[in-house]
Image (cartoon, rainbow, N blue to C red; front, top):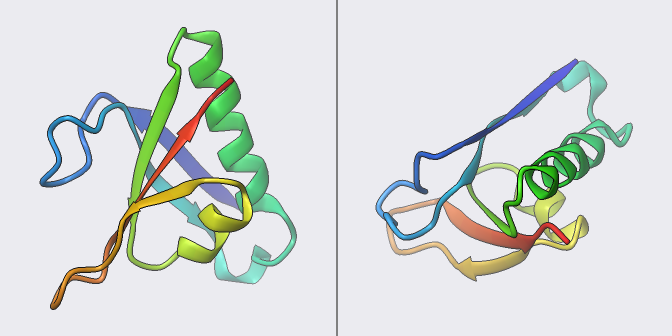
Length: 91
């Protein structure tokens, strides 16, 4: 139904923003059922258990989900780039 991972890889173009949520995806037929929210919450819980205090994410398509789940947009779209960058404390 969906997937998410946490990677040491920094947000593209932002080497200081790591670790980051990557591979965040919910199958279109399963969207709008809270699965994305559950995946992001599980990511934060897992990171917290590993001693990670903050996560980052870059998305071109799921900004509304990140905002709804309490992530803070720390960098908005630049001209010609459709990616927003988010941050959230895990505690």
